[in-house]
Length: 125
Image (cartoon, rainbow, N blue to C red):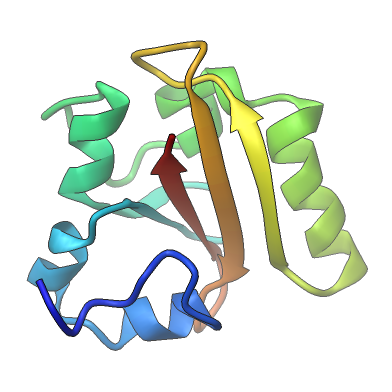
């Protein structure tokens, strides 16, 4: 689908926030928005399907403890928290592991969300 931001789009969070909600579901990569407490505000269909999470309810649940406990560690959540503490949440890194396939390589981008919270974008290799 044309007109959608690419995973490598500069300021990806702002580009995604300009999309209609249905178009966020059409992104070819996972998009998860968390509020300041870590609860899911947006969990796009691509992420639900590709992660193996499926159709279970995600919105309102804490991402790291209820949805992705495999990412509740120093290498993933800790990296995000360190970036938040430094005052600039705009990071990219690779992570091995996934809900459905623990050996899968993920490209991860995390950026601040407008009005607080963060976006986690996940592209699977």
